[in-house]
Image (cartoon, rainbow, N blue to C red; front, top):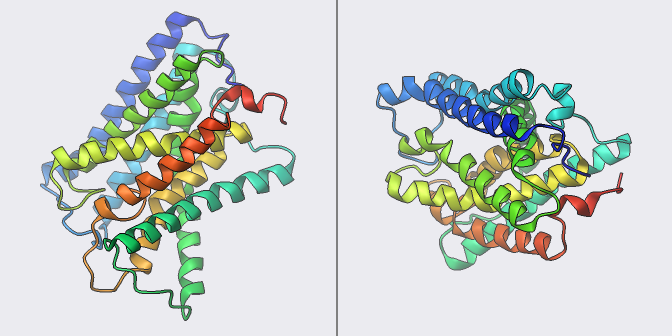
Length: 300
């Protein structure tokens, strides 16, 4: 699989990058403004989001996709949107099923490994696996994740469909490394309004949550990119992102003692146990060449 952006003039590509980031960031701040003005603050990891919070989050998640579509249509004029943003199913259909299963299984395995590390270190209050009701919980969690998929298309059409390919140069290792880091940092800082309200790290001040989010995003971004590269489609990246942001969080709650305090900084994918397992997996992908777009050339 290759990243086909070479036909876009350099001046258009650079202008598009600035416009994309500007629209995506402004869209996020605008969507979160009702909560920021209202002084909303999330203080507990078990706290459920209300209707207003859910609407604001949904609007924010659509901003990267809208920004990407705007740039493709009005600045790049590079062809069909679905081709420009890799909005397609992997073919044949057997490959689609495999890509989607991998996108589900890998984050699940990373989350489980992070919970094991957290439990061994004494930071995760593991309460055992209660088989009675586990199936119902899993079915409900999967259904909830599937319902939320359109919103994650809103994010990944921007980050994986647009931004990463425009930053990367397949034959230049330095450019690829820069693309991974810059996309990860941009992805993290885009979350700044929610971080200021305690969204990902409840109860933590911004000078703790922002660096933690930077580490989390720079580490997880290559996993999403790998899912996109190996399939030639943003769809598996969408599934992987949806799992990390929904089912992974639910797993932390499901297997913890019911009344124990939960601190995302010390458990799950957003905390240091998740950084360890994700970092190890990214190191494996790097050493085996799987983060190189050229690795997948001719693999279809």
